[in-house]
Length: 184
Image 1 (cartoon, rainbow, N blue to C red):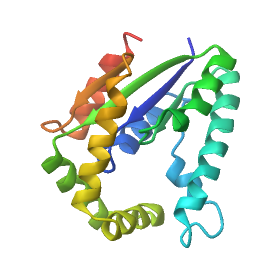
Image 2: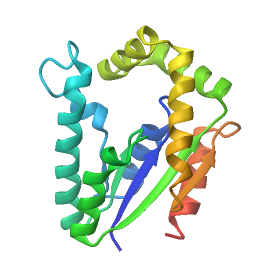
Image 3: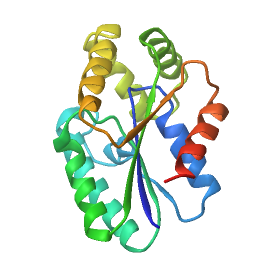
């Protein structure tokens, strides 16, 4: 069965790391990182928020194509609104794939610490840009709001599975994700 695995969670919690690890271990799996697609669009540094919906549309089309060809897709992307996930769910439905949502969460203190560490070490331009956006829009307050928005969004979603990553290493979180995916 072909799967679309949505790795949801706040920035810096390890979504992209897990997606890349899984794709590395599973040939033909697409780790579909919207932030990378954003960085492929001219002018993204000047207007990230205008570029993001365009990148999401491109990602949904890529997901549809990859699923239709019989391959899994992992989407490491924060989603806090039904409208943001709808194009991906349409691709899942159109291709007969299975949708799995794995939410990576940690307490706010851990989230802020991990995000700050990632931002300081970030080699990718889009990662540095996201760190700058968070910093200029409230820093810790914005991360707290994102967490609340995510928890509110998840209240109505009975098909998601949550991994509390607070005490887990990236390897331990990956193994937990593999355990979840082995049953879905």
